[in-house]
Length: 461
Image (cartoon, rainbow, N blue to C red):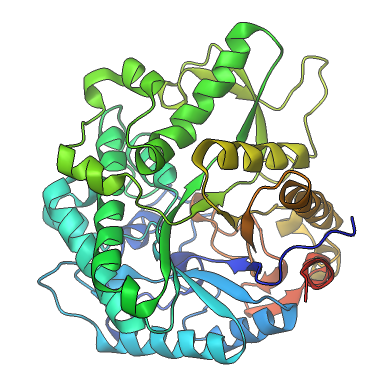
């Protein structure tokens, strides 16, 4: 396509503090729930942890140099709550060393022409708050402590940061952390995750209110939330499978997006979950509704949806990649939940614009090449499968923006570096830069060069 993205289009890479920083006890940082979880035997696939990760708390200069060389004009990263306020709470001390560290990092990004996009919470709750009162399960305490933390970041960094994201993927925080137990803090059950999800929405909304009331006018920034969703295609044209695809989106995305953008939970979710889905007070929903200046989207794949799943979390929808004729929907990746399917990305962007009418920032999108971790570096860097993925997804993005009129304002690939991939440890690699975790040597892959050229060619000057 000869079409271009607008000159103010943001493109770059996304990371998360626990996945890259390392230095878990340096300059006053206290443990997060992910420190505790990853050090619990049997929780991480390769029995690893984030103690070193990509050593980015110390090697941040190398990271910025990689970003600058890539041509990225922006960088989405998260701040570690347990660095800023090691014990987490509104009555606890602020860590001056962490304020200085992130301040210098942000200023250096800007000096290199890279716009900082800051995520306040990417899953690493201070362990002290989990121990003190149950963390996200305690609405009265966690909302106040989270807003205090957010306000601290606005106060110290808001003159340099103009783009804020409150939470990354509340679905993952709540479901994987409090229902399946796959993520920190490792709880299992069928009730807690509804409470946590509800509390995350309220904490998000009151942090946004604090920003708008106290900082936005003078700092001139914007604030929102990032939600995750895989596009859902009915397995076939049967009415029950068409309904299943719609229900799957409601349970994965709508139960977070609808309160924020419409002011209520989806009816299909309320009907199925009943009393276990908490109610908002009138004051809470008045703060939640309209509490995002944009739509932050993390998306990686498309799934086929059919009636008959046994997971209430998914709305009793069964997902598959195998089409009725036995073929696969897309190209397989290193993880079972992700296949390449660019048309689904375009469909999802259209759906979000039609449904929620907010400008969209694609805050994560990426691909782990199958078996990449077991290959020698000279083969890893020739990551043609990842290049194919990005070629398809960037084309879908361009078509959605130019042919369909979807206001897509930014795109952040996941990720600039191979890193600690949560419960997969270091076995799964999403980076466009190979990291030798023994030496921390960084080697850009072919996908790094592809994205550099693609965005140079497709953003208007």
